[in-house]
Length: 260
Image 1: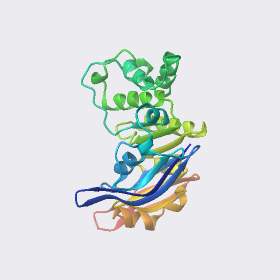
Image 2: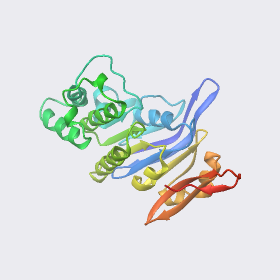
Image 3: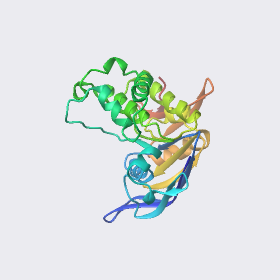
Image 4: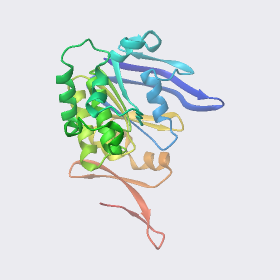
């Protein structure tokens, strides 16, 4: 399954939120969309998923144009995790995850739901009311719901934003495992170190434009990141891993590289 975007542009009034972006995502890979606030990351993801219609340009999922995919057909092709999931009714966590099975005919729903909750470390929350969960717990339950939808394309918008260190790694490991199983995974990330560790390619946006789309070591460069983020950035190898470090001013005003 492949995602193919060609010259996608999204406008809101006189503002251009995404400007002529072309990219593709293949089954078996994780594409991380990165960039500063307001770069157009979530807007681009919404255009790729069909939740938002581009002002111009085209998006195809598996060789079919998005306008031709609606309802159940679209829900069986791609699953989307938005930044925020709000539920007013006191559904249990297990009931929320079961919602992901709606596009599928009845069958092994309980087995799939149990497996996805185990993957996201939420089995112990199964009987808890969703509104009573912490932000991080809700995020993991919502991810389990998306995984339970069992689609060949997985789109995640900042899935680690509310999570602690262990669960950030767990979520990206799950996304990576889905890619290894053949899924095309698109994930919006602010943490460039997670992008470096788990993404096959990084799409770097600036002011709605695609500045680069390539493997992490080609995109996560000190010069490019410093320019795009408007802040001095150092990139180095630590134990074989690519590590992105912002530079901070000391009391004397000199810049130093921060290290954890």
